[in-house]
Length: 59
Image 1 (cartoon, rainbow, N blue to C red):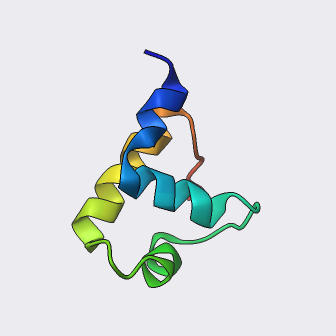
Image 2 (tube, rainbow, N blue to C red):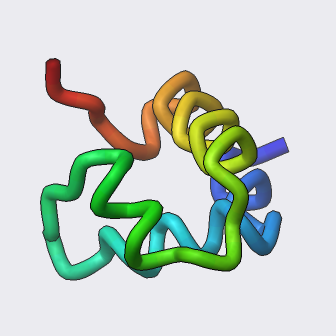
Image 3 (cartoon, rainbow, N blue to C red):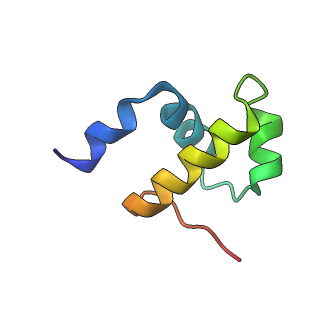
């Protein structure tokens, strides 16, 4: 399966859409942009996208 197909999950799509313009957001800021997504779910999908190499996380 290609990585792009893994983006078809609705939560992952919302995360990518929030970041698509090149914005650099902290998980807290991302949570404010996506208030309909529970924090635990958001963090899980951020980690998933990071593990796929779709997003980068700066420390």
